[in-house]
Image (cartoon, rainbow, N blue to C red; front, top):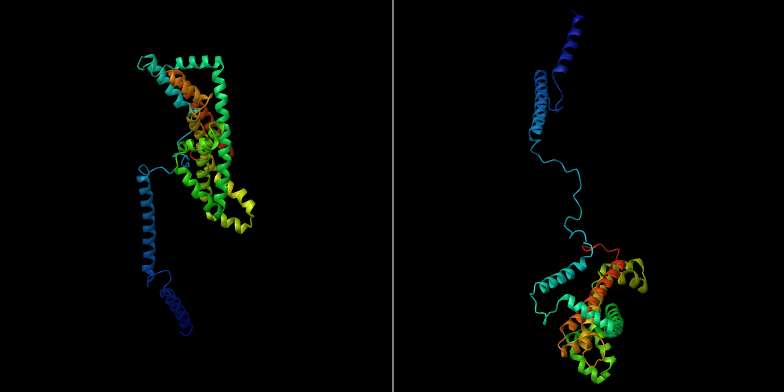
Length: 331
């Protein structure tokens, strides 16, 4: 009996230790039997949930949208690829309609001659030598006035855009000049400069410099002030700041003004060459008006249009080359 008591006590202690679990151990039940049952239920529930999820995925897999494997195509909102010779499509269509209407007899030949009549007249004027002389005279006048106006517009815009003192002295005066009709200055300039070539070149220069000044000055004033702060932090000098930040930032506005100035030189020329002139396209058109030669007038207008289109295209080409770093909708 004495030897069996320790064995029984040990067995009882072992059973008690097995029967009483520690509190809070993985959320087990107080009794071993319940713990086993709960574990079996948890395993069964987990298996059921996994199977249900698999069935749900299989059932909805056909209806669910397929995952996107590729990237969204870039540039979908852009105007699209540039058409070849897109600048010529409109003029070619215009001449085609003109020729078709003339061939169908829908146009009065005395008011609007047919395109082939205008071309034949241009050939006759060229063979006589009068058209080539008039073209060279007009090109010289327009070129001289454009060069003078370009220089004045750039210098004034840089002075007003980079200096508060220059802005106070120049901008108000230019805005006043812009409000005055330029062609209304012709009588005053004739009294000042005479009726020769000088006043014609001066008027063309005024017509050219105003759009160049306005667009360049606006571009200079619109440069973000954060670039100025960045240049100050980097310790850039005034000259380097103008060369590396101001000029590249103002070039887009400058080219807009340049295009307007080129067109303005031709618009002013057609009026000025009808005032005390002995040669030039405007003079040729004025003489044709006196004799009722509509075809000659159309020859002059077509040459003006061709000069304007070519000069604008040349400025566009230079702009694309100079601003090749810029990415826009049109590039």
